[in-house]
Image (cartoon, rainbow, N blue to C red; front, top):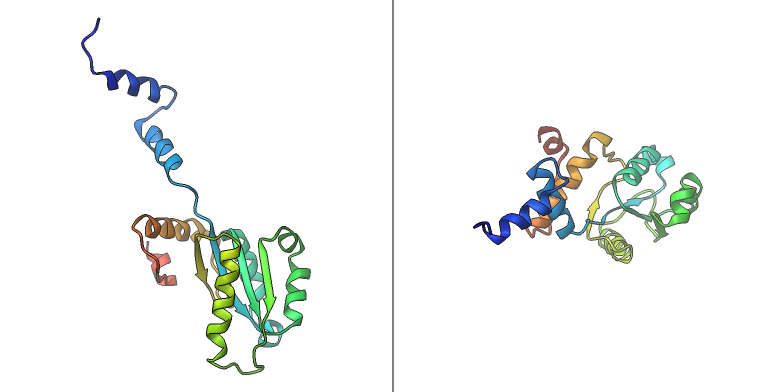
Length: 172
């Protein structure tokens, strides 16, 4: 009978099939941390009239986030979104509701109402984290993984609010 610690044999059997310790440890830690469901929300108010890059912005959001919620201040915008993104609309990844917004100007009194509605919808989509983006903000595909990693780090450190600027994403 060999004189070796019990755990040594266990580790050797557990690591069998992995080429490095790092791969083994990554496998263990991935199992212990459930995936994060990250949503994005924003507000939309007649973007054609305002000449905002709404299609590109929403397309990038759909690629980067697990759920996209929009509060539309112009009633035809809801139908416009359903027609522009039929697959995402049908499977529920894109959700939009109409809530009146003064046009062409907006008021600060409406702002928290729209934000709270968006947060309620994001919660209904089972999002662990939500990111608020203006409709003229486009997240570039090279920053998707970096943004998700930043949120994962904030979650691990038990943070609940993270301010991210485009400058930070470029510098990290």
